[in-house]
Structure formats: C-alpha cells, structure tokens
Amino acid sequence: MHDPMTGLEKAVWWTEYVIRNKGAKHLRNPAVNLPFYQYYLLDVIGFLVLATISVVAVVIVLIKKMIKLFLNNFIQNRSKIKKIQ
Image 1 (cartoon, rainbow, N blue to C red):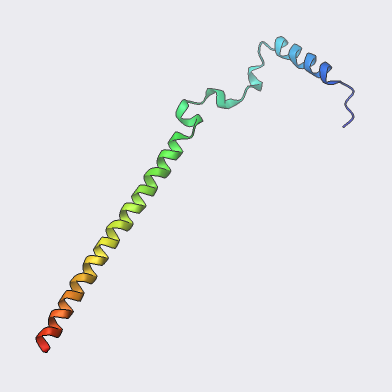
Image 2: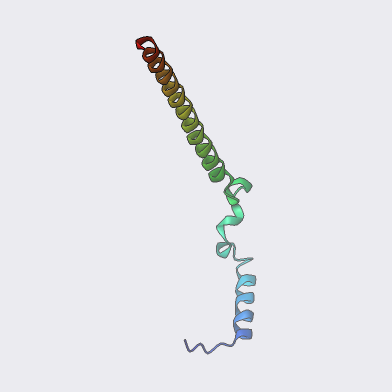
C-alpha cells in the first residue's frame, strides 16, 4: 500500500529489468504463441455450431416422423369410422 517508488521510478525500473533480461520473454502472455484458430476460439465455436445444428436436425426429423405417424393414425381411424357408419 505504501510503495516508496513513484510511477516514474517503477517505469524506469521495469524498463531496466526488461533490458537486463533480454526482453523478459518469461513475462510475455502465453496467448502470443497460440495458433490463430485457438486464439479466437474458432475450434470451440465450430464445435458448438456443429453440435447445435446436429441437435436441431434430430429434433426436426423426430417432429416430421411424429407428424407422419399421427396423420397416418388419424387417417386410418377416420376410414374405420366411415366403414362402420
């Protein structure tokens, strides 16, 4: 809390530290070394999009099959009722 160094002294100290350690590569952010697709999370986004499309496709197929089943059942019941009358 009570730092004896001023802002300018800290800036000078860190600048000298980086010069002494030849760039201080150990202080660099590891994200600098990531490939483009990992840095922008394109692999994660691609997986989520693919998973969402798959779920939507399965739901659509199931809904179509259910509608077809209900319509066939309705038509068969209707034809049975007409035969009885």
